[in-house]
Length: 458
Ligand code: BES
Ligand code: MN
Ligand code: MN
Image (tube, rainbow, N blue to C red):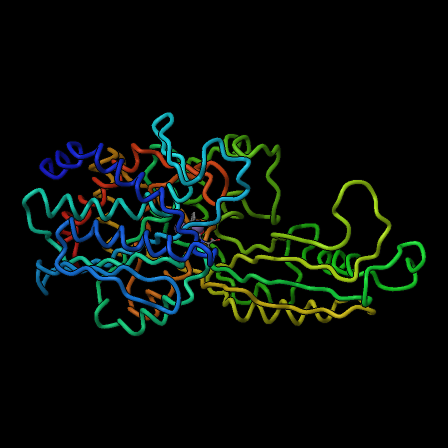
């Protein structure tokens, strides 16, 4: 153990500077103008996995951005195999004017690195690249078999990764998946995420007259698409926060009493949480705590809405069309396709007369859960304990990593969500950052996990 930890300590500076190099590459997967940069990030990871000394490292082309695939199977077939997953693509950095330093020029401030992707997920994925190097360069053979896939399309819904999993099913066979792409419960509070929400993401367009109209000349006599949109949206939820789409809750598995009990004991600092986002009151579905609402209950939220005049001053106009983007976060056992269909049927039913509507489903994803008695979680617990000096907490997270459900479906294995980020890391927001101390502790925890895992195999 100390040999591994000594190596991490001795190489900390270099590890940081390599992470900074990775963060300089603007690998925004949704921006087709940056396709070459997305690829550059894949090549960077490929090279570093090769430098680490892995047996086989290669880039796999897909219809979209490439997947980096690596293997090191020297432990042999009687030892467990861990498949490490991460993503090297990032969200767009805008709005740029709100960044205090440019998003692709990483800077260190107060022990944190500021850059797009620092926490989600370059910093966290790179933890595993360096944990593998730590094993292979500190003179010992890895006690477990390791496979790695780091993809470049997570932030656009991993459209090519499910076919990739299916095609490489044999090659990717493993006993468990290990992912660092979530947050810890709080600073210095190691946590294992045992559930993720799924997602159904809808676009709703409302069409009225064949052109924008004078709101005095025509107003009052036709359906205004923007008014119609607001009427529809107002009928999606009631005052108690319940979603009104018929059948929406039919497949929801409620939190068990045991789970609610465990949830109520988590050290959630609600005041601090509200303060960190500049909000004075927590509001949501009646009968559930804030923590339950934001991680274990389904949601429906507007993510964007448009129509009509947005410029300076007043323009008297009835817009010809209006639209909205709406996300629904899903919990076990909701199915994104079923929910999209129920949404569409309901919206078509309640749409006011005099307008046409169009409903489009964007990418979605299934929710996922890891059974709390899975032996891999116990090994992870031990690794956290040996680095952070504390047992990890167990909580579900509200975000989504859709591929996790597919690991279970296609490869038949559980995923360990060993996150080292914090909810205050501003992922997807301006000034994203990641604690370099947790980058460092993460490398040790990941290395230690690979060491202790064989002891826990059932
Ligand atoms: N790493 C996040 C998901 C996440 C963040 C899970 C924090 C738990 C805690 C991931 O990169 C992400 O942003 N996922 C998207 C889903 C996707 C389909 C675009 C999300 O949750 O919106
Ligand atoms: Mn992520
Ligand atoms: Mn993300």
